Image (cartoon, rainbow, N blue to C red; front, top):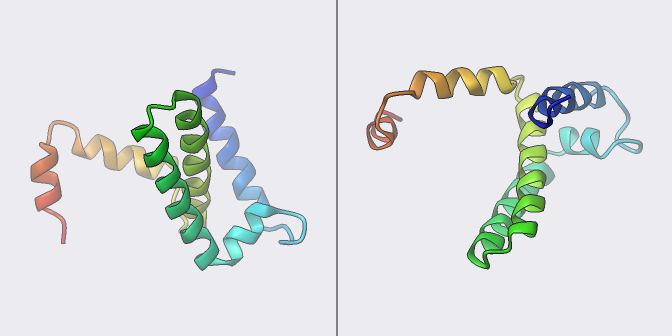
Length: 105
């Protein structure tokens, strides 16, 4: 399995954890507690920023992994998946980031 393919495996694991008891699964706990999930996303994003400003490549890798995991939990909780996100990115291909940002509500 290529490393990038693991995101599909992780997505499947997160989907399965959704139906487990929160006492047994951290992922299920996050799914049940929107406040905790959103706080964790914010926390991981801040830790990634700090690591980036410190140019700490090893910590950037770890914090990015934490952020991606928590983001994937949020996607599953929102009934979205990586295909949905990829489709959005494909739609933006060739569009200036400045223009795309202006087009949002």
